[in-house]
Length: 304
Image 1 (cartoon, one colour):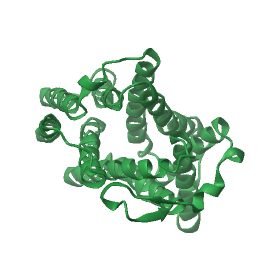
Image 2 (cartoon, one colour):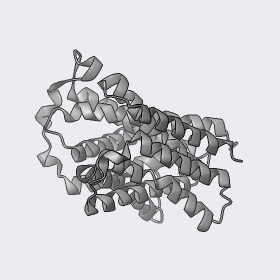
Image 3 (cartoon, helix red, strand yellow):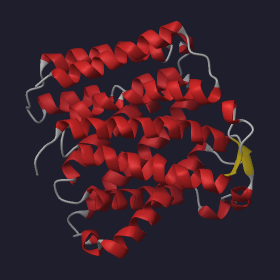
């Protein structure tokens, strides 16, 4: 397959944008009051698995064939790379300011670059390291790190866990697509993520009656109300299946290190979406931080 870097960049940026919009959609759903962020993640994983499996059974059944040797990898990818990253993140934001939690989580691209350099012995150019440093400085300004200086030990450990599992997801996805199609890899990943969440939170305790409730879209769309089930459907398809699929498919065209740096666009897009949709304030330092992150992303793409 011919590598097309420009296509890979576009895929990751599109995935980051969809995740950013999904953050606001999730916030709208959470205003219903009876759905926790962990339960919402369970809906995402289970819904994504069911939809992907149904599509593959109907049109690409042969891609679902799996050998016993592959199962340990797929379990690790689903639980470690999909379920744990969400769990660690939710524990982190419960105990830390969200800016601190996000900044630590986005150390993941640095971990990916270190793995590439010292484990895989790949040549990681100096411009990539400079881009990583620039992006982290920009995120510190964008997320207004100084507003979250009250640190918590468990929160810090959870944030570090989120960074490790996010890096694990990228690296395992890069390995997985060499053996399986993007859709089948994600289908099995979400299968084991859904199984993990079903053990942690049995479906018998799910608030099913909430699905028919209507919630306001908040902010500039406050006058519009949509049913919770419809917002969850959006979250499963455009907030989960499509962006995860784009990121995994992008690894056929660009390296995991570049993909990780490009993924740093998510907080930038999230800040813009929150400003445009929810009327959240945007400080001048955040604009400077966003510009620095974009400069870091651009610098990374100029390195051969």
